[in-house]
Image 1 (cartoon, one colour):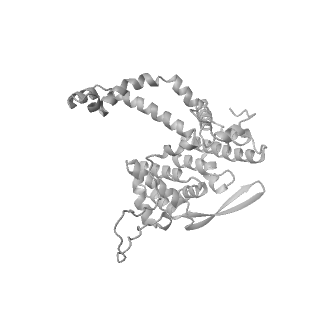
Image 2 (cartoon, helix red, strand yellow):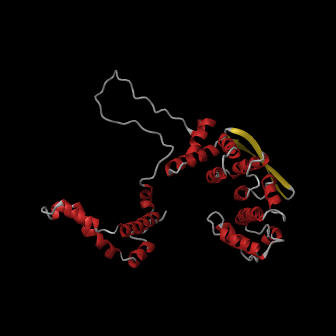
Image 3 (cartoon, rainbow, N blue to C red):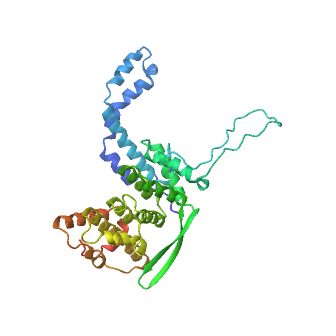
Length: 346
């Protein structure tokens, strides 16, 4: 691997030349020096005088300066591998095993060893454990939300639960994948069906989407079962939107509800989300095929344009703008560039 260049990167050098760093810093450096070392600077100065100087600081301006420097620091750390560790400073480490305190004590051959920490890994959790940790997702405390998200990400990746088959159908060929509807998916599905309010249900769908990374078919199956069991929001735009974020183009079981929702005659909010879902799924599927095979498999005009019929000019404009906006999302951008080359879809 080539050695990284020394000194500031071009981006950081541009920042240092464009931002009047010294002039801003010089407003605060004398105050910092006076507060941090007033006895060394002037031992006769009263502490009350130091406090009065601190009271003159514009805290809003100081906060803005701090944010600028913080972003510059993280940007610089992100440009050098040997500095990247500093970006993790202060971050919570989850899933670690607590170690014993290695305090030095007199050796006693008769002393009992310290007990091992009592650990229960997510892979050993049962339904009650997931219900307990799920409560943190509804908390206003970020720490509890992150703990719940990490737990469900791990839970969704398990292989304990009910096995089911995903059928992929592409033209005249079919294939079948075996995967698992985990305990965590089952608990979330039950909570979604029994959600006491719409807001509660929206938060659960957000948890499903946020924790489904790497296992979209399992999450899509959760939504399909919710629809099949007649969940209170089974035909709501939020459910159609979530299915469009997860479903695969060649899985009829997942695409079925989207096909129904995209038909003319459906309420516009539902139909809009279904068409946008079709669009996202097409971009993901076709873009990946083009990357892997370096050729075109399907055209946007053949697959998506037929859905945009019997709509008002305002509705069509809303769809076109939403499509154009969605391709800038990080998860679609690369695929969209390949799908939209030499295309007249916009």
